[in-house]
Amino acid sequence: MASFADFVRKRRGAPDPPQPTPATRALPSVPAQPQAVPAPPKVLLVTTANLFTYDGSGRTVDMTKRPTGGLTLTHALTRHVHALGGSIVAVDFVRDDYDVAERRWEGIPIKCVRLGAPMHLSADVVVTTSLALDVVMWAAAHCSGTFCAMCHDYSGAPWGPFGHVDAKQRAPLRDALAGWNLLCDSKHVTAYHERFGPANVTPRLCYGACYGYFRAPPLYQHAVAAEYVTLISPCAPKGLSILAAIAPRLPDVRFLCVATAWTNAVVQHILKRFPNVVVEAGAPDVDVFYRRTKVLLVPSIWPEAFGLVATEAAARGIPVVSTDFGGLAEANPVERLRLPTRWFYDHAAFELLRCHLDDAMERPQAEPPADVLDSSGDERRERVAKHLFHCLLHVAPKDVADAFVETLTRLLADDAFYADAARDSREGAMAFIERNDGTFVGVVKGVLL
Image 1 (cartoon, helix red, strand yellow):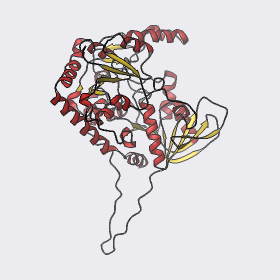
Image 2 (tube, rainbow, N blue to C red):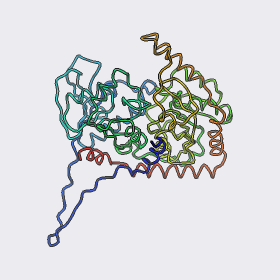
Image 3 (cartoon, rainbow, N blue to C red):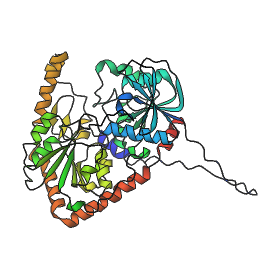
Image 4 (cartoon, rainbow, N blue to C red):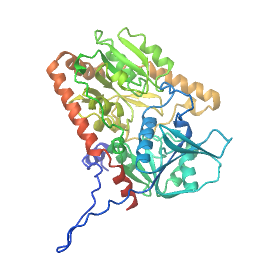
């Protein structure tokens, strides 16, 4: 059997989703009549009520307490489905003091429904914003149409070496997803689910760019004069150990670490030990940080589904130095700044391993440590916390850090090299965005064929 690396290499040659073009044909002797543009399929988006800060609620958004990528993608898809004339329903898995509440978020109407409220909805295409079993089961019970689930990662599915679904939920979720389509964030994620998923589930490529995630990014023409090398969401899987290895070797470089929900108090304490590292809390407006960024550092060492920040920064003309893990090979448009890295964070086993992501794909899913398997409840949580703490203390080996030190040093010292990288970043990212922008309609039409 071919290796996963070969499988992905072949898959990456596949074209991006095409934009639909209505066919027109004039009869030989009859003047051509303008054809009506067919209406897009009716889309119903099923999400969860806790993902939105509703208009008039008086609440503010604290990005250090909320997830980033999946949440911001859900928000972008909500805007896009509304613009297409679709509907949004948000299931409330917490409150039980109402049946249906009509709310608004950014002026967009969202129907919030209690988990047990009687309801039936229909659409051409029903899209859930996650693979969570409770969301999938609610949609199947209360909606009719062709079903799709947004697939923002590898871990939410009940198959493959990186699936993190609870053992008791794997079989029910696998059964519930029979006949569904998975709308995947990258070619790499699509290839993963094609290889490891069952034949009755259809993975389809659907970048965030397909529904307007990256629309109209500003260009920072003077990024070369900015102050920081920036890392967003530092933590063990996002390459904390690599930063810990390179920061002392580049004492004159100022690093800005943006703390999000990924960045707990222990990580922040570790970062503050380095005199050239500044830690700031995340904010909804990412340009607060990009305006001060000369280079974005994305040293992810786990299965990275795409890497939204890489395309965000590149589209602004900011060079991105990253690993080549997972979807980062698609998100970072400049190949010479994508560094092959043999340093992998195994989230299941709480280990850092000397291997590449694609090597890890070739082995079975790791089991948690024995002391974790033998415990439950609070004791289990304490043991997991202990193993995670040890992962946070790792420093990447010198040979792993060398490529990052060399690439950053050249970008920061060689203005011509930086200028070429900034130009190629902007051009590559904008070409990707323009190629995919607005193709979500084509994706959902494809599931109806």
